Image 1 (cartoon, rainbow, N blue to C red):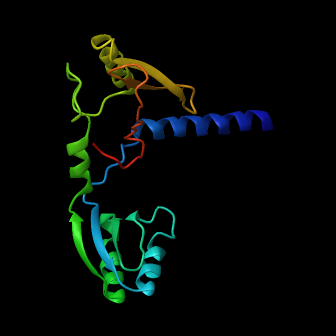
Image 2 (image 1 turned 180 degrees about the vertical axis):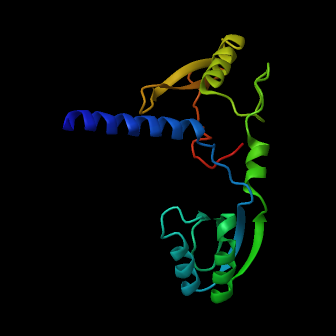
Length: 183
């Protein structure tokens, strides 16, 4: 009987998790604001750091608080009263830098697939790699597709080598590798 009860309990958990995943909404940042804060004292920097001590508390630094540096802090709408209270307590000056983070994200969201590759839209990794291969086909004497290694997940890290004559020195460029680097 204990074994049957455990199976029932496990199935109940599986069903609840499945339902939760089905009805889960995509995270949005509607009405989240980003503030630029001028930090002039160590006390101000320490008090601002305390805002992010709690897990999932609605505060996220885009630039960490350091004395004599400008701080960027994203604040969830439900945390705005707390933010304004802390700013009054520490007497730090601030300005709204981004009024609505979601509006900014929406402007940077991938567009519907276009027939041409551009640098104004996000593209899948396969699309980017196809573009690199196409460049090598279009300019076979100047562009060569290379693989610089493999990702943690075992995918190739592809790039191109551009050269206008043999044995030229080269440079290495990379970009778009950090989560908040929107195009």
